[in-house]
Image (tube, rainbow, N blue to C red; front, side, top):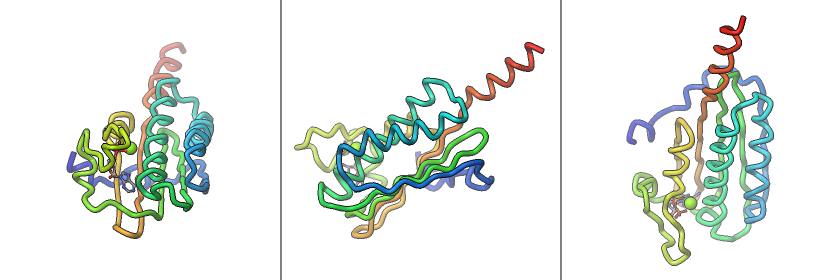
Length: 166
Ligand SMILES: Nc1ncnc2c1ncn2[C@@H]1O[C@H](COP(=O)(O)OP(=O)(O)O)[C@@H](O)[C@H]1O
Ligand SMILES: [Mg+2]
């Protein structure tokens, strides 16, 4: 868990084969918009249905957090950056909201600062489960940046199958 906190997104060292940035207001209806855009963007790599679902779910959690916790339903913009590599995607969700005081605590399974809102406290755990690396950077009063990396292992399987078929 700790190693993940300090881990750098290793794919970041390579040159992306494609990239895009999306900026949208922190409205709850943009949560589904953001996850559809992310899924659509990575579809060009032809990942598996499961990998697509994993990315959608993780993006959804990160964007929801920016809206509900970052801006607490106040106005503000969310930036989503997608860097596509030949075997992976790095997605960064940035808000300029209130920030996180204790990142380690916030990442604990079941921890939520809004138990009254029936939050599950599992957002970060879900992101970690469905993505290969999750980095959280935050400054109180400045905002939060969540960087998630996902390797598309299904592409390797596909390559292998294609080779074996020859
Ligand atoms: N973008 C953010 N800005 C400010 N605080 C955040 C942000 N994302 C997460 N947090 C904090 O981390 C906690 C845990 O987040 P999460 O695991 O998604 O659980 P939940 O959203 O159900 O509370 C939140 O309750 C909140 O205090
Ligand atoms: Mg959450």
